[in-house]
Amino acid sequence: MAKNYKREGETIDFTAAAATAAGTLVIVGAVACVSLNAVANGAKGVGHCEGVWELPALTAATGAQGAIAYATPAGLITGVSTSNTAIGKFWEPLLNGQTVALVKLNA
Image (cartoon, rainbow, N blue to C red):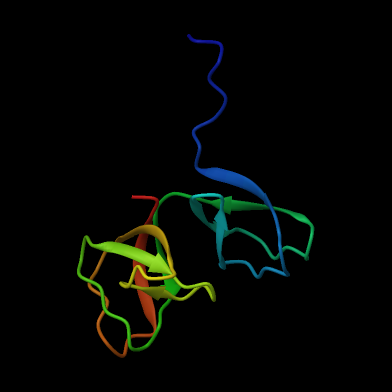
């Protein structure tokens, strides 16, 4: 077996830029992850960066199934790219009025 293999890559370590609750979306460079635990401001945390997650959405946002999902600077999911960060794909359609979105991270 190759000796340079390190891990599967399901998680990524991060330093919290603010107090972060478990289940909160965190952007590490260009990698979207969900914090696995509550992390104090400036402390080290671990984020899961694979799979489909239920994340808070802008209530007036929409997104087609399979389309790119974006996070606003406040961490809310939308289908609009302007001033937002691509985090994955909508696993189910996001309809106007929904408060959560199903998103496959980093897809």
